Length: 327
Image (cartoon, rainbow, N blue to C red):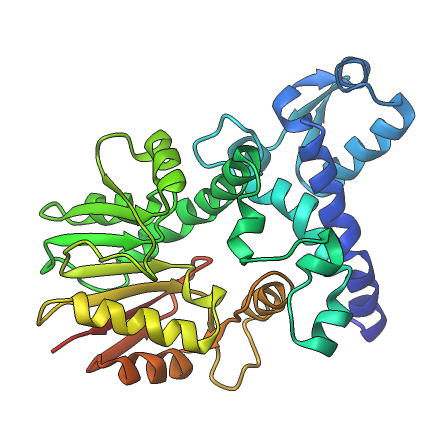
C-alpha cells in the first residue's frame, strides 16, 4: 500500500461504517431478500438514493444481488439481523446513535481529557445513567454488549484451565454471556450474573433459568459468594481509584485459592497496538472515565489489591483474558 492509499482508506473509513450503520438503522438486513422497489416502499425511501446505499452495501460485502433482488451475505445474515442469536445489531445502532456523534468531539476530549456526554447530548451525571436513560436505550446497549460477548466469551473462559472452580459469579455480567460460556465449558461449574436490578431482569431473555440472576451494585453491595469472579469489559470503564476500590472488594470476598477472570482488550506493553485496542481506548475517552491498558498495568493494579499471581493471554477474539489468583 502506498502512502497515498493509506490516507485515502482512512478518509473513507467513516463513510464505510456509516453506510452499514444507516442500512442497519433502516432495517435493510431484516427485510431482505427483496427488490429495490419493495425495499423503497417498505422503508419509505427515495428509490435512487436507496439504490446507492444498497449498492454500497454490496461493495462492502454485506449484500449481494440475485437477479433483481438484494440478499444478505452470510456475515450480514448472522450479525446484522435482529432475530439472529449472534446479532451485533445492538452495538451497531448504539454506535450510530451515540458513539458516532460523540467521536465528532474527539479533539475536545483529547484537549480536556474527559468524556463528551455533556458537550454532545447535554447530559450530566454517572456515565451509565446515559446508557440506560430509557428501557429502549438500555435494551439496545445490552444487546450490543451481548453481540460482542457471544464471539468473545468462549475464548476467554478457555484461555485458562478453570475446572478447579465450583462457583462463578460474573460481576456486571449484563446478559450473562460470560457466565453461560463458563458453564458450557466446565460441566461442574455453576454460575450467576450480578448486575443492577433492571439489567439482571433483562438478562432473563438470554440465560433463562440456566444462570442465577442477582441484583446489586458491585461498588456498594455485598458480593455473592464465589470462588471465581468475572469482570467482562468492566475495568476499562473506570478510573484507577475506582478500579482499586473494586479489586480490593473482590479480593476480600474471595476465599483462599479463589481467582478473578478479567475480559478486556489488552494493549501491547509499548502501546504500539493492536489497532483495535487503541481505537477502543479512544472510545473510552469520549464516553467513560476509563481506558484500555497493558497487561503490566492491569497486573500492577491486581497485585496492589492483594492478588499473588497474574497471567494474561491474547485470545484472538475481540476480548483477551487475565486470571488473577488469591493465595
